[in-house]
Image (cartoon, rainbow, N blue to C red; front, top):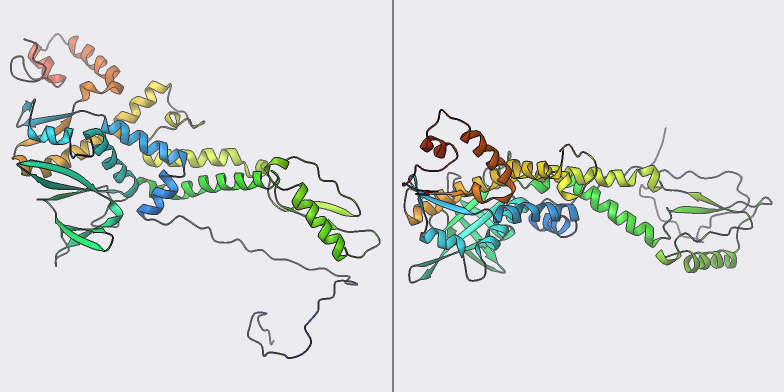
Length: 395
């Protein structure tokens, strides 16, 4: 059977232009529509930041909630087991550079981790024994490896210029776990990319629906009883009336007056058919899940498995904020401890975290009721040193 594809190359024919006959056709035609491939946001820092943090309210609020909460956690510095009330390292974290305070610097650092999976910190000698900490934008930094594949430096790009910053002595690279990459981290937002694109597409579809008279797309079918087609003048007049009288958000809901054999056939799913609201909420919950934020804290209805807002807030601190802060404290301790002196250890002060006050009160009450413990043992159980030796000395 000699079958040829309709789009195969054919020899050119010279002659009168072909005309399609519209009148007198007893049959019809069939339009086949194949399901197209979905288009996803690119998996790079700039695209995730633009489509997620800058255009999606759920991702924006989740990143800000984690970054702002984590950056407000106060630091503690220990040398061996003794707490240091003052130290140049604490001063550096309090004022990393001339442009940023400590909270602003840490908020940006956590934001880089959440959106890129990587955070790059450079230690700059400001002269006169002073040092500054600066963040390098993740999409402008590449990890430089040696001949064995081990990371040894960072290459920072600014316009056409490039500079090399040595890891360890002058820079640190903080990265979240990535199962398929040895040098770069995996951002939580990328795990929620499908939900992110679904949520953004639902918003764009809703806006386009409002702009198009708040009606799904369809077709006007001309099927007069006596047969025939619209004349050219009739077609142009009908087209003009539709554009001028029924298009735009201000004309939403205006009834369409049909006459002369015209009939409206909807060619798209309605918002009810698409379960539009629930689809957006489902995508929102997936985004919140990827970041580790309880949906209740973001105002997302459904799946409120927590008894109340206070319980959800406590889970947010315990399961998301504190692990991120603890991870960062350990990384900075290893890096800056080698610069300011061995034996230094950074940690967070759980007693000054407002979201954990109920947990601390419960712990103190339980320890206080343990009559078999001495006062010093009770102090050690809640994280305090014995009286007269360190933290929390009330004598």
